[in-house]
Length: 359
Image 1 (tube, rainbow, N blue to C red):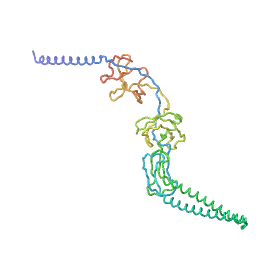
Image 2 (cartoon, rainbow, N blue to C red; image 1 turned 90 degrees about the vertical axis):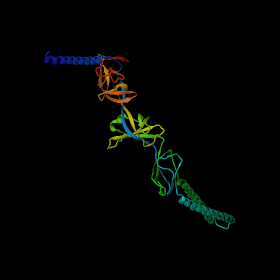
Image 3 (cartoon, rainbow, N blue to C red; image 1 turned 180 degrees about the horizontal axis):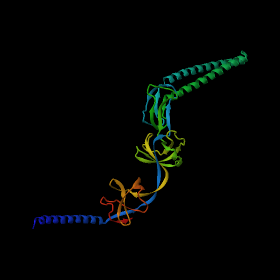
Image 4 (cartoon, rainbow, N blue to C red; image 1 turned 180 degrees about the vertical axis):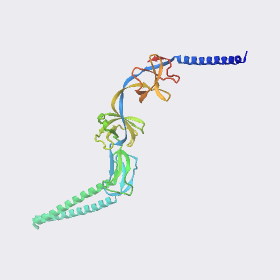
């Protein structure tokens, strides 16, 4: 055996071994592709989906009150702070009543003086009536004495009326809450001078809360008073059902949006100022719906495996919408009547042969 033969024989053996290994690998891959996978499939259905218009807004009180004094006086005590819950009739603050009490005492003195003057005038009248009967005084003199008595009586009635008014001022030195609510602002501090019509505290009622939001002018035709609307409150982590109470058609000239107020039922923990979102139903559209379990990810794309008539599974990327009750909207990528694989496994690949079981 020459040198060339010695070299060629080992090379031929290596070539045979490599070609045999490649054939085995190709056969395994072909067998793998031909392996039939049993899968469950469902038929894509078209359903009517509500078209929602979403906005943001805040909870507000339908009753906001500026508490003020009806009399002038220095603030002696403020018994509440911002954020405090208050009840109707609860004492909120006290004013210094020294001026009021001084005025009452002064008016009482006038009442006593007027009462004494009336008694004196009545005594004179009684005496002059006796003299008139005896003919000792003229009728004109008696008339003048009677007039003095009437003036004294009217003066006493006037003084008593002033005293009653002064006593009524006592109640205004103790200011009470007119509603059940929450203190949202304190405009004055202890020692400040309270004056009529100048706000001291701001209260908001916790009953009859509203949700305020703004809608685009193009949506005014779709939103009417009395419409039902879903309101999600972030702080409560729950959804509430509301009713459109008022729509203000006069829009803001800068934002081109109009104010909408939504009435809410009393909900524990719901307070003015809480942030939330609204979902107004403004129409209906027909879209395919599939189970969320049908979705899978292949190469960073979300989609489903669709089974064709040849029982081959093909991965299809989808444009998806909102999820609700375990189902998700398909905006693009599927049509009615197509079969998608439910809960596809990670071993399922594009082009795999499957044996579908439909239900």
